Length: 123
Image (cartoon, rainbow, N blue to C red; front, side):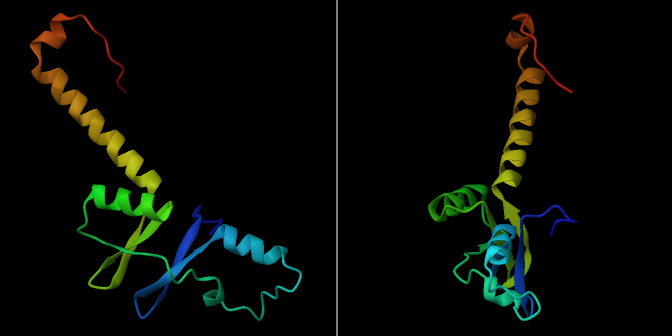
């Protein structure tokens, strides 16, 4: 996880997600004096109540699910099989890009904006 800079992984069985395991889950286990890495199966850390979302779900549905469940990430499934994982950070980046596109469209199609003399920041 550390080498790939990810905070959680989805544990699967036959391509079907069983749940998430986070770096925090593992760190807390290591602090337990009875923890034995050689004898502990990763499935013991799986949060089996982790919800999933279908790949064709809308952004609103995703944000609502994350908000209702108090989650930062959720596995994405297609036909019951793991397709990926999406996080709240991914949504923020996506929405930021969309807002930038909207701003560009407004600036390019609005003569009033050009006449106003307003300046804007862009990369």
